[in-house]
Every structure is written in C-alpha cells, then in structure tokens.
Length: 545
Image (cartoon, rainbow, N blue to C red; front, top):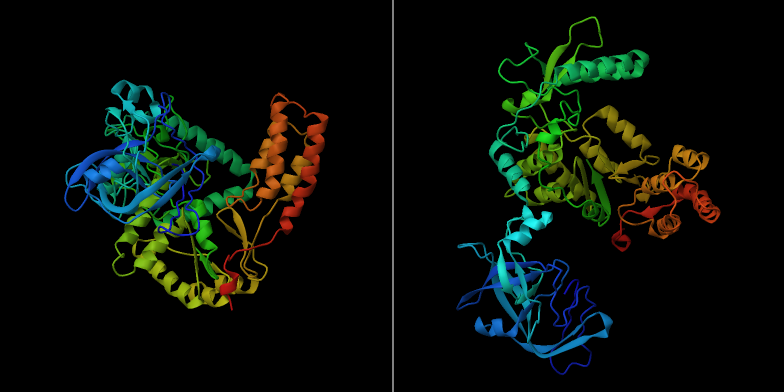
C-alpha cells in the first residue's frame, strides 16, 4: 500500500478511522507482469521466530501483517477498528485489527534485528503470488547486478516500510567501490578501478596535442595564460602536483591526461576504467529544506590519492613556453573530472567526521546530513548555537586537512566569529546587506534572509533573438533551476507549452506553430520578473524575536 496513512481510535469513538488513498491496489488478482518488491525476512516475537516474505514500500506510513502469521508468532496487542481506503472508493474494514510489536531482520544468521511498533494485523492481506527464477533475473538488466535470490510461488505476509539491513541495497559495482574505499582510505584514498588489473593505453602523444592546443589558446588569451600560470604555481606550492624525473614509465604504459578523465586514447578513457561509486551524497532537497528550518543560517583539492594510483593522473606542462620540451607532472590529489571523485570525496569527508561522533554528535550529524559536495548549510535557533556548531565542524574538517572558507551568514556576529581572514571579513561585513550568495543552485540574500532567483540578461537576450525551436524552448526551461519547486506556479505554464509543441510533431530545429510561438513569447516576457521574486528563507517566522 504505497503512501498509505492510517489513523485509528479505540472502540466506541465517534469519528471514523481512515487511511489515505493508495497508489497500489490489491484486489485479489495476480500480477503476471509487474514484479513487486518481495524480500526474504525473519520475524521475531518473544517466544519464537519465523521466516517470511515482505512487500517493501518506502512510501507507506504503516505496516500491515497477516493475521495468520501474527497468530503463529503468538503476537498480541489491543484490538481496534481499522478502515483502509483504496483508489476508486474501495474500502476494507478490519473490526478487530490488533496493534502489535515485532522484531525483523534479514534472513542471515545473527543478522541485526530492528523493532517494528504499531504493526496492524489484517485478516487477509491477499497479496499476489510471485516467483523469480534465475532466467528472469538475467533477463532484467536492472536486477542482474543486485543480490536477489530466486524464489517460487511466494506470497508476502508483511507489507509496509521495512528495514532489514543496516546498509542500503547496492549493486555489485557499488559494493566493490565500498570495499576499495574502506581498504584504501586512511589519510589518502585509492581510485575506484573497475578491475584489479587494468591495462591502459599510452596517451603521451594525445597529451602533447592537448598541451599545444592549450598553449595556442593561452597565446591568444592573456587572462587565460595568467590564470593557468598562477594556478599551476599555486598547485606546486600546495603539493597538489609535482614534476616527475622521467616522462615515461619503463614498467607500464599509464594514461597521462590533461585534466580530462573522459579523454579517449584507442577508444579508452580513464573514466571508462573507473567505477562511479555509490551515491552517498545527502539529498539536495533535504539539505535545502533543513537550511530553511531555523532562523540563523550559515554555509561553507584536499584528498590525497595513494601513490600507486597517481601515475594514472599524469599530465604535461612547460609554463607556456613552447620552445621547451614538455615536462611530465602527476596530480597527487583527486581531480574533479574523475567519475569516482564525488563518491570518494564524500566518503573521506564522512569517515573523517565519524571519528568524532562520540565527542561531538551534533557536529558530525551536521557534516554528514547537511553537506552537499563541498557546501555546508546549517540553520539553528540562535547565533550562539550556530557559532558553536560551526567552530566544531571547522575543527573536525581541519583534523582531516580540509579548510573551511567563504563563511556566509544572515548574522554579522556569526561571520565575525568564524572568518579568520581580516580582509575577507571586512569585505563580507560591508557588503552583507547587498550580498547575493549562490546556495546549491538557489540564490540567497543573507542581509535580508530571503531566497531569490537570478535570470541572466544573456539568457533573455539569447532566447529573444534566436528563432524559437523545440530545442531552444527546452534549453530555456531547463536553465531555470528550482529544486524546491518554489516556481512551480510559473514553470508549469512553460511545461504545458512544451507539451503542446511536442504534440505538433515538429522536429527539434523546426519553427514553432504560430499559436505555440505566441504562447512561448508571452511566457518569455514574464521571465525577467523572476529576478524580483523574494521568498523568506526561514519557514518558522513565528519563532523569531
């Protein structure tokens, strides 16, 4: 029962017990094509344990168990009336539904047990019978890499939001990535190779061509040359890169890439040889929502790669002097373009923080739950609390070699307490009232503590000057980033226009119909007004003094 919500009272109450509408209906019919998420489990009561199958539904707000299974486990609890309502006004009444407590675990021996409370008994769940064989698992690509064991003619006897493991279900690639990270991460980490032995083609000639191309651009663009020279000098000083004595490796031909892990040599790139790693990032929407919960808000190349993996990150450089022979350098830290870098950076950041969970649980929770990539967002009730948490977070990151900088807050006192750079402090204090900070794609006015949107003049000019085509319409719509749906009232009109364009069956580069073009132009005329939108960041205004 997807997304169900059950409310109940004791017998003799005057108001009706009701569950919200369900996205999945079971009316006793079998499902021949749909595969439901059946997982093997072990259930425990005070006196016995039984193996069974559960239908997992993360959206459910209640858990249901078949009455026969509850009786077999000798479960007992208070009986109250329960009314379940499905779509189509189909209802099912359970006049004697017990509220019971049971423990659950994965079927493996000595698996961790979890307590399930307020589980409601149902006389007959009537869930469809299902079988999954080896051939079916192989034929479904999305299932072939998951650790699913075959089963035959199974009916689930428990349904709802069930946790049977302390770890999320991962693919074989993600499991390998986790093994590498756990084995290689100390004060450095290893790249996430797809296989233990990788044979990479020699990319020296490709690197020379790319170096010459970059030098040609630098000769025509002095600011680019200055940036590259300063950046490379800075990287040398910080130890991010170092020059190698020999250009080639006499033992192995390692890929040498010029800041592009997707560059291919003989049809192979470094990213082709690397695993992406598990997605362990905190939810973007969750981070942003928590950033809006409290009145006081604040926001925030250091992971070294182990020596044996560094040769895969070689590149050529000669300080812009094309008369010199290219020198071979190696990047000793993670590069942003490697496909495994986000997973590695997040793993190292969290692992460093977890060392302090006993002494500073709130700060560790702030790091693990409220950091997205390299931005830390936090909101609390008072300025003193945010300073205390931020100082602890800063200390924890510093212990792992991570420097926190560019502090921003809606409180000048917080900025003064946290910013060490006097010049940067003066700049931020003086400009706070007019400051406009980008926060994970949104724009924040910390001085006024408001969220806003920025539509650049270049986008408007390009959208207005170029003839509107289906491709151009889609490009403009996708350029308006709204992760929290705050502009839903406005963007929905653009999506309706795009739907109409799609129904006209024109190609990507064809002109719109007169009617669609008129609707599109009217919507474009209103886009510039988004720059005037102001939305309170904090959603708890009544708590402010």
